[in-house]
Image (tube, rainbow, N blue to C red):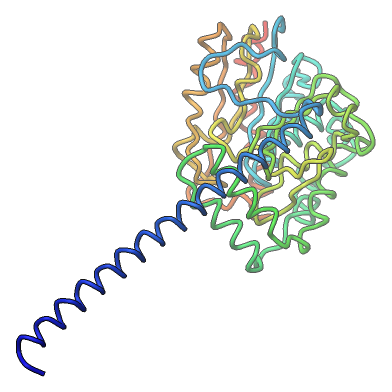
Length: 368
């Protein structure tokens, strides 16, 4: 091939390749745009369908992001909020409220409203259903309780699907509704059969015959809808409307992704209420005159069950801005504590019991 012809061929080929490449790039971009638009359209359709179908169940209450008086707490004087924290915190609560009973504080009678999340949902339900009072009188408290709790602790050595749900949950960097949906979908896809009876056993122990009804109008449990990411709140009215027993409300609130559940409430599968940026859901008591808030951590230090940021101090400032006076108790945890380890239960009972001795007088003064 002559040199001039060769140069002409290369030039023509280069232009052709550039044209093909350019055309291909446009085609790829068009396909990507079409896919993106299709996904957006489908997401909107799915959200619309879900909202339309579930609008009447009354369970979803949006999490307040600024100081807002709660319709549930309007006109109330004494309210109580109990946050979550696994088996350790259930045991801590049992020791704590046992100690308060001995100090003359019957916390089953004083609050007009109790909001419970995860461990707090079990404790609140146990208190208000009257089951805790029966348990503490029938069992030798520090001798039998650790043994009972150890038997109902979740099985260790999670399978791959459980690991995925746990690791997705422990990779979260924000508490947006989209993040909650991603964690919820991983929770739905986890095979939790090894722990399938764990929640039922805890519920049966702590709430007694509350497996068929919601016997107390003062108890509210919280959870996160695995599909929509919405915050769900169950009280007696919505429970009876959707045929939700108190034991199931407590169980759903404690359905930690990759460990147990999700639990079906009405027609919604629900995971642990702590999977959001208002982990104790203190906004639900905003506007009451006084709120006793008990959380495992301050949201910054101590053991965690999700990496979603927990700005508890700001959550509390927001309800104080509505006029609610708050007594905030932080239980605290030893360094490196595994909140799901049954070996920690005996120590947690004792720690909670001892803490009650230092808090009882302050609580009496706060309620006075």
